[in-house]
Image (cartoon, rainbow, N blue to C red; front, top):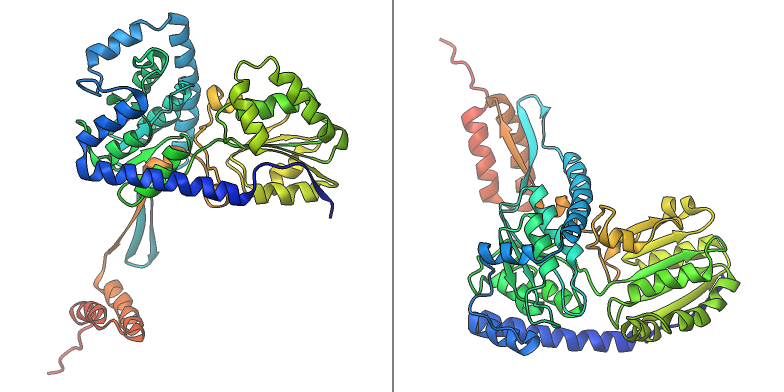
Length: 434
C-alpha cells in the first residue's frame, strides 16, 4: 500500500486540545443559562453579539417590515431555492409509510410516523448570514408536519440589526416564531425555554464548534438532529479533474471558518503536487482569503494514493461531511463508499450547489459522524412509534404461554404474572361433563 501525505493539517493532539477547550466553555455557558435563564441569555447576547433588545422575538409587523427591505429579485431567488428543497423533502416524506400487519392469527403489529410537536431551528450568522440554512431546517420541519417551529439567528455584526435575507427565508419557510439570538445561548434558550420561547422537543441546524458542542451537551434534555459543524470537504479526484477546479472546490469550503478541513484525495501525482501553487494563486484574489488561508494552513490535506482501492479505504476512514467524486469512474466510489454525509458526483456539480440551491439538505454529519448517521431530512423530525393489539382470546393465550416461560428464564416474575393472568382469563376452558 502506498498512501502519502503531501500535506497534513494540525496534529490529532492539537485538535483534541482545541475540542477540550470548546467543551469547557460551552459547559459553563449551559450551566449559567440553566441557573439564571433569561438574565444569562441577555448577558451572553450582549457579550458575544452586542445585542440586548427589549424583545428577542420579532413581531409579525417587524417581520413584514424586514421582508419589505429585501429586493424582489432576492425574494424570488429565495423562493426558488425553497421550492427545490420543499419538492425533495416532500418526495422523501412520501417514502415513509405507516405499517400494520397481522403477524400470526389475531396478533396485529404496526408503527405510526409521528412528527415531533416542536423544533428549534438554528440558522448561523456572524460573518456569513447562512440564509440557506433556513430552508434546510425550518422548511424541512414544516414539510415533516412539526406544529411549532422556533427559528433563531444572530444579528448582523456589520449593521447590528436582524439579517434581512435570513429573516425573509425563515418567514417564507414557515417559521412560527423568529428570534434574533445567536450561538450557544440560542441553543440553550430553545432547550430551556428562555426569553419568551417555549421549550422545544428538539434542536437542529449547523454551526461552528461551539454550536455543535452545545447540541452534543444538550442531547437528552432535547433531541438533536446530528453533530453538524464545522464544515468539511473531501475531494476524491484523478486526472479527470484539473488543479484549478480542485482548489476552487477545496477553498469553497475552507472559507467557512478557520477550522474547516478541506482534503484532496487523489491518485494523480501531477494534481497532488500542483495544489499548493494553485492555492497560493487563488488566495491572492479571494476576498475571504483571511479565513480560507488559515483553514487551509491548519486543516488542509493532500493525500496521494496509488489505486482506487486505497483511495476508498482512506475516504471511508475520513468519513467527511461533503464528498466530491471527480474521477473518470465515479460509480466505483458511489457503489462502495459507506461513510459520508452527502455525495457530489462529477465535475458538473459541487458542494456549493448542495449548500445553497439544488434541493438536498446541507445540514450533514461532521467529525466522522457519517459512520452512523445521515444528514438532516424530514425523517429526523419524525418518530416511528410501534403499537400492538390482539384481536382474539386464542391469540392472547398463545402469546401468553410463550411469554410466561420467557419471563421466567430471566427472573421477571411480575412480568410472568402479566402473561399468566391472560392465559388464565383467555385460555381454553375445560368443558364440565355432567
